[in-house]
Length: 174
Image (tube, helix red, strand yellow):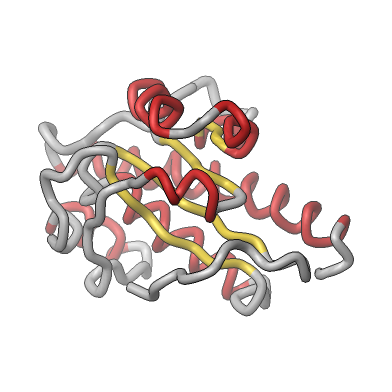
């Protein structure tokens, strides 16, 4: 997983962090899906993508094998990703901090000061055509849950990419 040493550049580069509880199911899946969309849009040099977990359960672990299998069936490779824990500095380093569900959203807010609150969002806000407000955790369920999560992540990723492109254009960077 690439390291991110500096805060976002004032030249218009943007950074996106996906956050779930353990960083082995939802957030690495979102990282893989969104990273590919960014690459396909020709913006890989402008948008940094990462993921983290609010808990330290799986630091250093690869994504869940079921998440990897579901992603692989749709052409996404998550095998090189490794879990890491969300930290206070992430609040300041990332332009978008995207929570998969309300519980993790609240945990993120508790780590960040009020000034960073504007960059913290629920992922499904970027898929307004869907009735779901959260991406459910598929960890305790079967393979179908991972497919459903991928459906949600793909939809929300397209909306997030639109938002990122608008911000880049507004900054004169797209």
